[in-house]
Image 1 (cartoon, rainbow, N blue to C red):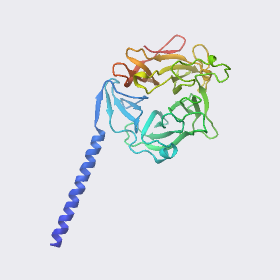
Image 2 (image 1 turned 180 degrees about the vertical axis):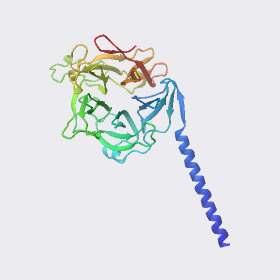
Image 3 (image 1 turned 180 degrees about the horizontal axis):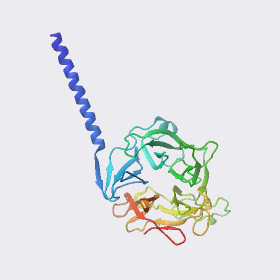
Length: 343
């Protein structure tokens, strides 16, 4: 009797274990389920390419991820890049949970590096984290800790919206910023963290801090005096092009986001617009804005030379989709004097 009971209990435990394993497998399968679309809803997109596949990473719970072979039909993966948030993110940013903003991704020295933003709306108590992986198809990214943090009442800048750039000497840099004192830049070391002894410096604002009269700082009737964020630096033909977003995102059809650009021969600037005005004191040539027919507004962009094409990507607040943020892709054309344009 005892032997029979033991065998019965063992069998029940085995069945329970098998059922639990099956349920876990089904949950993993459900997380991996994906859907396809030609109009992906996306916010703050960046792009990468590996093994004949394009990857988009964007703002979302644990970082949104989608893939495509042709950049027309996208497979939106329901399992995010980060399924578990590092504890340091919550320790560093009060109120942050899992909604990760504005990642950037780059391949450097045989490894993929991804920066991401941890923050809460309207505050500059923020942090930029770092992940790495040998391949974009690798299932788990390594947590590489924090690159930079900003603190309320300590820093006059906001550590969100990161962008990596590698200069012509194979030196990595990071640019970031949103409102406060504008767009920041700092040199990184070989681990993609801030190089020893280096401090962030401002490279772009919406206004001239030396101006003595408010009328000397016309920015926008839509926004405050330093509504600038989301930097992205692209190299082309001996120039570094700094794209930034002006005005306000994240308001659906009421958004008024738009993109401006300047350029420099040096990654550290100065970045001048087409009229020669320094972006540090409010310069910037308008590059893209909403047309009110397809998009109410558009911004938070990235720009690449990829597979023989120069590609501009951003999100736009779609008129047709009631202000939903969807993916925009456009080929970049270059003027005779070296300025980017798109249709």
